[in-house]
Image (cartoon, rainbow over all chains, first blue to last red; front, side, top):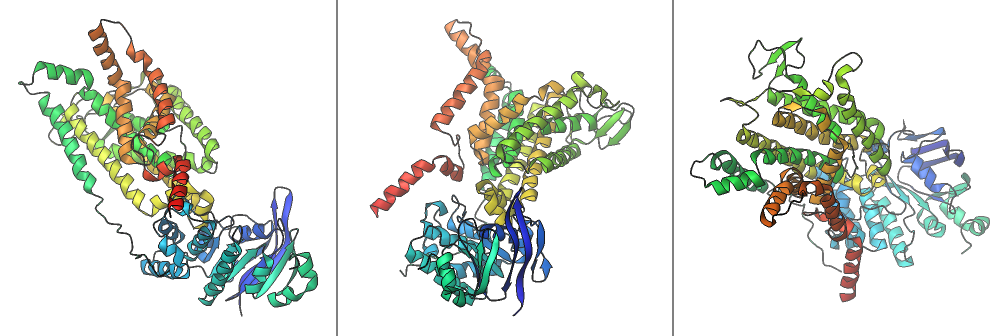
Length: 238
Length: 394
């Protein structure tokens, strides 16, 4: 297995406040890796640094062997990292179709885009029913489906999912996580950021547990799930 | 559920050229009225007077100059959602391009390039059509130069900085008699007499309104074409995405800086066209014409007409420039005549504008002919209620 994404000892700060210190993680081709931890642990900051919205003060990030830290966001999307952002951030006044088309903004292969459109609509049949509807009028769950689909439209080799279960009913959470597994089966590597650690560990191969800006623990998801100390400390002890 | 809506690719080439027919007819009518009807000997004197009182040829042409520029501003404000309060700067630069390259201003030079004046005339005399393009590109360049440092700012701050540039550039021209030792603008005296427009059969002087009407109609059509084309293309979608949610747009791979700069450049290009056109319309370049009020005036045209919709913007520009230029004073004369009063209606222009703006904001915030999507933005509350009632009905 080759490392697709390698984050090496990055430090990220907002002004004087260091949000992430000395974080390293690896995502291998074909894996689902999850980054879990409580609110304010630095998960989203790490993700934003990978996707080019923030610059690390120290350390480096490589994707498929190339340095990507400090590059602008659109370059990173072009390199094959797309994300479904926290809070979904769909374009509320555009139709579902227009949202999806924007997801493929950087692509020129019309046939490929059309095929991917079919693919995501097969993944989320609900979106097919709403294809001409204004995205802002859909339910939270549908909007989340759209956000994930929109990211997939960029044909990413690495998909970043930031809190896809946030604010959703348990039934929908299950459905979203089932789909995440399906997306991986179709060949997309996934880095999943989650507060809902139990659900995330269920689908992930490996996991990193973050706390106050540092990686506290890492390992196989199945092992971490069994670890009693972790279950109590970070995962709410279900 | 097995109901799968057909997902056929949207027909992007659906007849988008229909407007050309309607536009040509409207333009032809205007042209016939102003070029032939007004010069027809059999025209009853009453109609002749009425046209001259309510909508003289010069007013129509001036309105079209405003339409051209409002369409440019619409690309920045309506499409990309960037508030620009200093658009007059581009108008000024365009105007001075005409002044520099189409007059005897640089009397110590003697450069002719398909110009319309005798070859022995001093100054730079470049062909009008070329100067249009030069003016457009010089403005686009300035758009990028101004935009590069400022477009990183968010909404309100961007508006403030553009406001500053809109003041600075006209001031530079206003005091341009000695710009580091060079006279770049003739200061308050202005650059008087720009070259006539060569159209093959003749050279158009300041009073060839009919011909110029055609030229301005053509320039407006070019701007409409550019606007509609860009809107449907990749760039238009990128602008729309930025207007909706900048951060999300960048996550989709939209290069923010480049996309915003392009909106500035295209908008400024139109300002350049408008500037050159206006200089030929008034046969000169006068620094005091380029003031802050023009920026606001143009913005009001875009907002009143309907941001983002070219037809709305054209309507808004026409109506406002007419009211401001001729409509109100003509109405005043008519009213005073009729009722034997002596009210100076033209002095109430700003009162009227203020009133119209308040009424518009109260009852029709989206403008006269709104863009459908923008209507949704401004009536979000109503729409949510609509959706709620639709859900209940299910």
